[in-house]
Amino acid sequence: MSDASAPVAIVGGGAVGTSTLFHLAEQHDVAGVLFEKGQLGSGSTSKAAGGVRNTYTTPLNVEIGNRAIDYFQTFEERVGEPLDFRQNGYMYLYHTDEWAARWRDLAVDLREQGVTAEIRSAADAAETFPGLDAAAIQGALYGPDCGHVDPHSLTQGFASAAVDRGATIHTKTAVTDVVVEDGAVVAVETEAGRYAVGAVLDAAGPWAARVGAMVGVGLPLSFFLRRIMVTSPMEGASGPLVIDPEWECYVEAERNGSLLVCDTAQDVHDVADPDTATEGSVGYDYYLRTTEKVERLLPGLADLDVVNGWGGVQSHTPDGHAILGPTDVEGFHVACGFSGHGVQQSPVVGAAMADLLATGSTDRFDVDQLALDRFERTDRIDPEGMA
Image 1: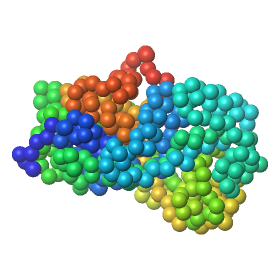
Image 2: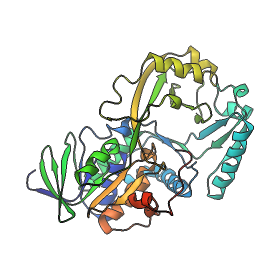
Image 3: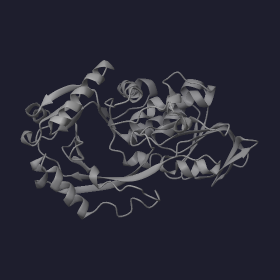
Image 4: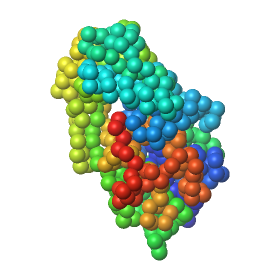
């Protein structure tokens, strides 16, 4: 690999990195190279619950969400690979008049932006997700266009299609340095040797800050650990992803009736090392506390067994938005800090990043709102209220 070269190198083989690699080849006939220190999708992408939504508080995220849903609906036609995507909806529960008013106002705003958003009574919500105790809630906001995507089939689909179009992927190959000369990227050093490149995209998820430090680019990222438990199947379980912001938890029914259950109040904040954050992170205490909380919404949960569980590290920014675009180092671009939205935003973001890397501009959406230098500006995008 010592004499190898490519126009663009991508660091990180998750959903965003593989999407960018595909769109470079598909839209711009640019055969990039991607380096992943583990297996494709083995970082945060593999730990994602796979939710897909357009229910945000900022117009830019709503726009990206709408476009992502459309992309997932037509994925096989666009990419030529199968995708496990189902539009089973999102449902946000509320318990108080204050939250009811908040969700009604948001529903109005969302509908003005082309989002289907419905306010449902407690009884209707319980019919929408069988097993939900109507007496435990006051009502819900329902977004039927939202859904679930399988992160594995998404990442593998982008990767396979990219390789078919001439791209190269190196797994189990960490990037050890990004070489800069006269203020511009000229090469990457990897565990397998040096690769001359014209541009680099840092899409390394929780490790993006380490890659940025290789070229002196500081990224304002913080990390926290989120955990999920998986239960045995619940008879009749189906319907939307159910989120309870007041009680800080969510539940989703898998195709076989198993439940993915998360207590977000038990998130571990200020994670220092993403390499070791998930070790021993999910155990009896987490399962017990999560079950005690969520069975107030789903009484049948107490009768189920816990069959699996995992923890994953999310990268967050101060305003809950991703950091996208070029930096002060010529040729060094970033796509990181997705605050848990990377998988669902990957088709749209990957297309935009491919444009930027290939041509220097994009009209997919207003990427400048998410530029790294926004944290130094007064005209910043509003923080995302549903991160």
